[in-house]
Image 1: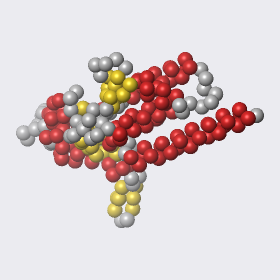
Image 2: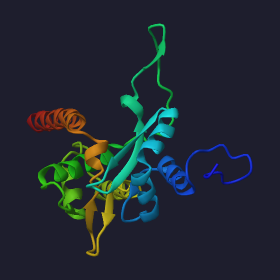
Image 3: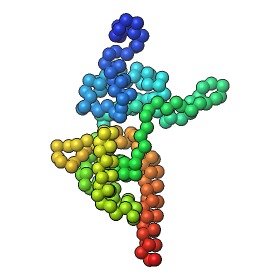
Length: 213
């Protein structure tokens, strides 16, 4: 076999494509500018890579305009047909992260910034402005500013680690990853935002009741 990398190797991918597969499985995503060789392999061997990922109940998401690629559960993670009109739950392969209250708020705000920007345009945000927006959703009894600042800092650092926001040459200014469009579609964002709006209204009503009493 031309692609045999060691004696007894039965793999069908080239060395470059195998490296790309490993990077995709490590996650959270591949960036065209940061992972040039891996990106080239993904775009060249997209069909073969997706076939291998399908064997793992995953699919390849490739956005060439945004320059990002990542994996996600195939077919939305829905049950799979196993024959005889039977279905089985799709096995979970990817490690999931539980988002904190602040994590979710930051992601919602960043996703909204992407929505308002013209397609293909870089979206740059100011960290302090994001913090101010996040704190609008704090509950009435959260008055410890130092504690809130620490929670925000930890959440924003996680967003950076997820590669959803990247530092720019200007201090405290960050570029929003276009991958957020793929990871959190409009319906998902609308649903989560609606829940937070309910939370915000409830908090306002609670505060008003306390003021009257």
